[in-house]
Every structure is written in structure tokens, then in C-alpha cells.
Length: 446
Image 1 (cartoon, rainbow, N blue to C red):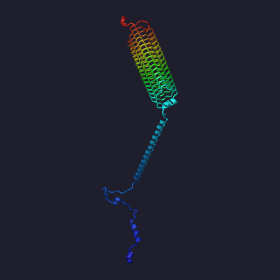
Image 2: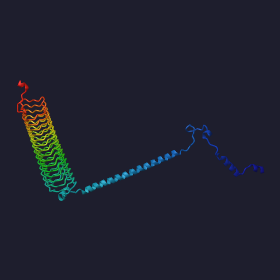
Image 3: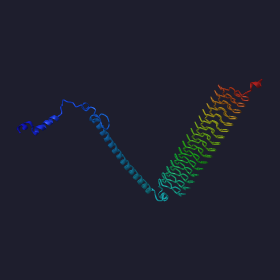
């Protein structure tokens, strides 16, 4: 028993020895490749690699996951807020509609006649014939196709109102405010618009025969195709107004401002435009036969192909006006200013141009047959190929004028100044020359 006991170690000692055996040696380095050569993965068939930790990749994955969660949260929050905002806007719109409906009187016509105030009211097709609406407040009111025949709307506020197709015949609108109003196709015969504000008003195709616009403000108004026969525009302001194809026969536009107005193809036959300002106005293809434009300002106006027969343009300013191919037969242009005017191909047969200033004017191929140009200034004018047969050019200034190829047969040039004039190829047979002698061709002399 003794020997056996000496050979065997106590239990605590055996445990301590076992721990010593299992404790790793710090001097040794474990090499998995050397220690376990040829070890392969049973699933992939490749040599297994050591499960080396990758802390950077793990952190990146965590960040990406966090960003994804945060983005999702933000998207959800934005959607919720948009839904709330949309709901709030719908509620506000509904409230506004309800409020507007509440503001709209049950009987707008009765309200208007009682209070003379009905802004934005719906008075479409209302019967307001002979109604007394002086100083009425009808801002943006809807009066489409309403009957306002013989109504009193003096000093009324109709800004932005809709009066399309309305019947306003014989009504009183003196000093009324109709800025931006829509009067398209309205019946406005004999209406009094004296001193009314019609700035940018729409009067397209409206019937305005015998209407009065004395001193009215019609700047930038649309009067295209409007019927304005015998209308009175005395001293009215029509600056930049659109009067294309308007019917203005016998209209009174005395002293009216039509600067930069569009009167293309307008009919102004027998119209009175004395002292009117038509600077840079477009009167192309217009009809102005027998119209009175005495003392009118037409500087730089466009009158291409216009009909101006028997028109009165005495003392008118037509400087730099474009009158190419216009018909001015028997027109009165005495003392008119036509400096640098374009009259190429124009017809001025039997026209009166006494003392007219045509300095630098372009009259190529113009028809001046029998025209009266006594003492006219044609200095440096271009009359190439012009027809001046029988024209009276006595005492006219033709210094440096270009008369090449012009036909001056039978013309009267007595006392005319032809210094520096180009008469090459000009036909002078039977013309009375500056010295008073009749021109005879060299062939006839022989």
C-alpha cells in the first residue's frame, strides 16, 4: 500500500499538471497552413482559409444598414407630412369655396339694384334695362349677355367685368372705369363713353356705330373688326390700340392719339383725322379715300398699298412715311412734309403738291402724271423712271435730283432749279425748260 501510494499523485496535483500541458506556449506560432496541410472544405472543395476577422467591413455594413433605416424613416416622414399638407389644402379650398358661396348674394340682381354694389357677382343674362347704376361697383362682375339697354352706368366701376355679348345700346358710361373689361361682340350703338377708361379693354367685333369716345382712354384696347361708323373719338387716346379691319367710315378722330396703333386694312373713308397723331401707326392696305388728315402727324407711318384718293393731307407730316404703291390720285398734299418718304410705285396722278417738301424722297417709278409740284422741294429726290408727263414743276427745287429715265414730256420746268440733277435718258419732249423755252429733240431740229 505504501509503494502504491508513493507512485500515485494526489488529485490536485494531477489537475495542475493537466493545466500546464494545455497552456499555450507564447514562443510558438501556430501556422494553420503548416499545421493542417491539405485540409479542404467538404462543401466547396477548396482549401479552407483561416477565419481572420474583418472589422472594417463589418463597420461599413453596419453604417449602410443604419443609413438605409434612416432613409426609410425620412421617406415615411415626408409622405406623412405631404398627406397632412394635402389634406389641409383641400380643407382650406373647401372653406374658400363655401365662403365664396356664402358671399354670393341669393339674388345678385336685387342686391345690385338696392345697394349698387355687387363685385364678382354672376349677373349673366340679367335684365337691367334702363337700370339706374350710376357709380355702381361691379368689379369683375359677370354681365355676359345681360340686357343693359339704356342703362345709366356713369362713373361705374366695371374693371375686369365680363360684358361679352351684352346689350348696352343707348347706355350712359361716361367716366366709367372699364379697364380690362371684356366687351367682345357687345351691342354698343350710341353708347356714351366720354372720358371713360377703356385701357386694354376687349371690344373685338363690337358694334359701336355712333358711339362717343370723346377724351376716352383706349390705350392698348382691342377694337379689331369693330364697327365704328360715325363714332366720335375726339381727342381720344388710342395709343397702341388694335383697330385692324375696323370700320371707321365717317368717324371723327380729330386730335386723337393713334401713335403706334394698328389700323391695317381699316376703313377710314371720309373719316376726320385733322391734327391726329398717327406716328408710326400701321395703315397698310387701309381705305382712307376722301379722309381729312390736314395737319396730321404721320411721321414713320406705314401706308403700303393704302387707298388715299382725294385725301386731304395739307400741312401733314409724312416724314419717313412708307407710302409704297399707295394710291394718292387727286390727293391734297400742299405744304406736306415728305422728307425721306418712300413713295416708290405710288400713284399721285393729278395730286396737289404745291410747296411740298420731298427732299430725299424715294419716288422711283411713281405716277405723277399731271401732278402740281409748283415750288416743291425735290432736292436729292429719287425720281428714276417716274412718270411726270404734264406735271407742273415750275420753280421747283430739283438740285441733285435723280431723274434718270423719267418721263417729263410736256412738263413745266419753268424757273426750276436743276443744278446737279441727273437727267440721263430722261424724256423731255415738249417740256418747258427752266429758261422758259420748249425742249425740242435734236432729231426734230435736223
